[in-house]
Image (cartoon, rainbow, N blue to C red; front, side, top):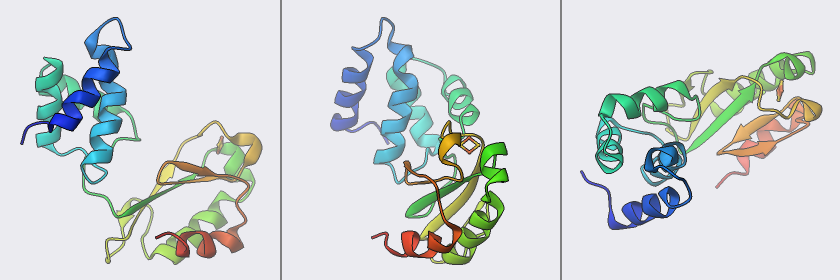
Length: 156
Ligand code: FES
C-alpha cells in the first residue's frame, strides 16, 4: 500500500509548517491513523517512513512511544479513562467500571462486537475537571459514573 494522493497532500501541507520535514511526523501519524481505521499497521508505518525518507524503525519508535497511537486494530470507538491521581481520587475506578460495563470490553481490550476499545490513560492535563474520559479524541470532563452508559450508548 502506498499513501493516497490525499494523504500525501496532507503530509506536504503539514511539513510546510515546519523548518524540517521530519518535524511533522507526529501530526502526520495522527492524520494517517485517522484515515486508516484508527490504527497504524506495519504497512502504514512503512508508507509513512517512505514519505518522510526515514527508516521504518524510526517511525515505529515514535509511534510506539506515544499512547495516542495504536499499533493494533481498535474498535469503532476508542474510550480512554484517565486513572492518574486527580481522576483516581475523584472516582476514576467507578468510571472505569461503568465504561467496562457499558462497552463489554475490559481495559486494554476491544468488545467482541468490535464497537469499543477501552484503554486507561495517564494524566490528560484536565485535572481540574476530574474525573474525565476521552472518547474518540474528545474530552468529556467531570464525568458522573452514573452517566457513562448514556454517553456511550448515544454514540453513532
Ligand atoms: S489526573 Fe486525570 S486529567 Fe489529570
